[in-house]
Length: 127
Image 1: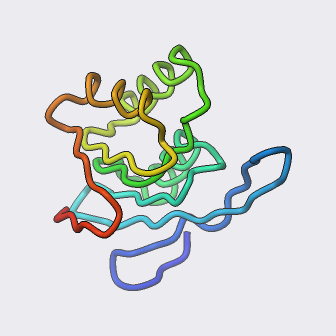
Image 2 (image 1 turned 60 degrees about the vertical axis):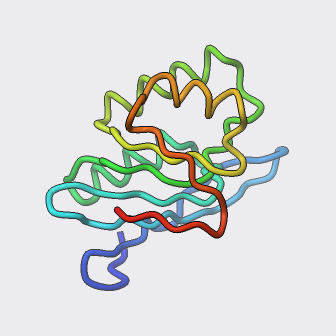
């Protein structure tokens, strides 16, 4: 991880794929007490991989997970597995955006209940 400012880090470069092309992305990690908020772009490396990297890098639970999760083309079964893995990692507040996909976002709403928040581009969120 790279320290950007007190309690704010990047994950460092993680590799993913889209349409057969390698895509390198970084996510932002914000340390909030003993927990983390992780903010992704489109999560091409995989949202679970990003959450694990954040948790392992800063030795803290990922409480908030925010951003595009690139699940729009996944099967419902694959999305259900990803949701379980995120919950197993300790994610309790989830904010899916743009490329997450409607079906995946709806599955997250059901799985996370009150921990699901809908935020659109341009809106702000207090963490």
